[in-house]
Length: 487
Ligand code: TXE
Image 1: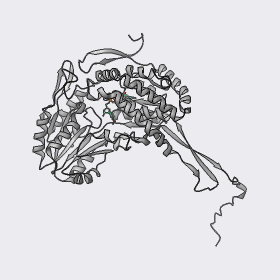
Image 2 (image 1 turned 45 degrees about the horizontal axis):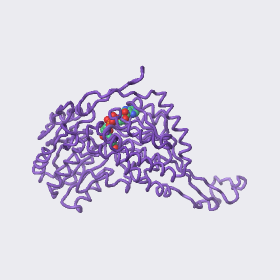
Image 3 (image 1 turned 135 degrees about the vertical axis):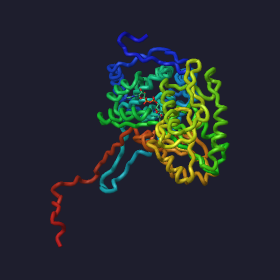
Image 4 (image 1 turned 60 degrees about the vertical axis):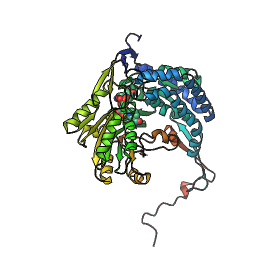
């Protein structure tokens, strides 16, 4: 029960539609107190050798494994039973163990030492200084995974972290913080505050750097607030990912890949396929096969573990999806299957929805729909397909499926997206730890959040320069001959 006078937020169950409980919002003064505590403890955390921080994070890993079932159940309750929830503790463990291996070499690569090139008597040493307190503000679609994606490398870097998860999906916090409490050194530098956008603004007011994952409108508000405080912010603001299917593509392969890429987790993934461009010569056969496969996708409304896709997590998401569909139909689109929000057991569901006769005047081809929607548009030439795919303010990922990799690669190289899947969709997990990518447009602003070098976002690199020779004297300086050298 929340204390009297404390603001609360009703927490809706995505499977039943009922309010499960009232979430007490962390008051602003408590946000400031937690931030001050973390900031004070961070000095000791940063002073530890990296090897000690790695040892602490390994112990945390062990606690996450020990509590994986409780975490999976809570994250599953938050999301209505998205498949990822069952593994979310293990995704965090993989993230941590990756950084246990990658942090040391990544930071070693960042170090510079040796003589100056321009002043031979000067020796340069570098020092990496972590930002004291990092704020992480995360969304509802992969609640724990997207809360820890930035928090973990920041902790390895020597920062303290204050997390503000989405008020839509807070259930994972309790089991997560149980694992943190069991590692006292970690509990000193990692804490959570609860609430909505107002609490997010309180976090921004108290930290030294922000990592934000969420929608474009709120990302803009976060960026403005960070600019007013002149603190760095890293924004991941969604996607409108295109898939191009060429005339030589294998239709069975292409429809299987596009369907999964478009409707996994009910399309509530930032790198979901949201637009599909198919060569006119195979368009009709592709659409027929896509509809056939889409109609085999089952909802998990009776049992979260029995079905392919679950309910919408966020109660207003169906309204957004339906508004996009209405606009598309009003402008000539045809809905061939799906497209209707079904209330089943109190949860809000939508079956995979295939549209044709779409065009770029429609919202559904421009703004992030974030639902199980597959709008298919025909194209005539590869140049036209590339132009259509690049006609977006986003640029998270893209996909190209062709008759061969050799045909797909030149197309992939022309797409404005941080990651391009070839001969498949949804390959983002394949690149983790190997390569840091820079998203295009508003999808990713401020630098790469993936790859070993992404830890450098949390550090400032200092140069310490020693002159082993005599200092220069102003008395030796010859005033520049303003008339230029004598003839
Ligand atoms: O975002 P919101 P949601 C995108 C996804 C979709 C959206 C879904 O594509 O567009 O995020 O997540 C807090 N000041 N991505 O609806 O509403 C809010 O409390 C400070 C992209 O949750 O923007 C929540 O914790 N904070 C991504 C968080 O911001 C504020 C992957 C996000 O809320 C705030 C996943 C404010 N004014 C989802 N207003 C990617 N590209 O990787 C809200 N918040």
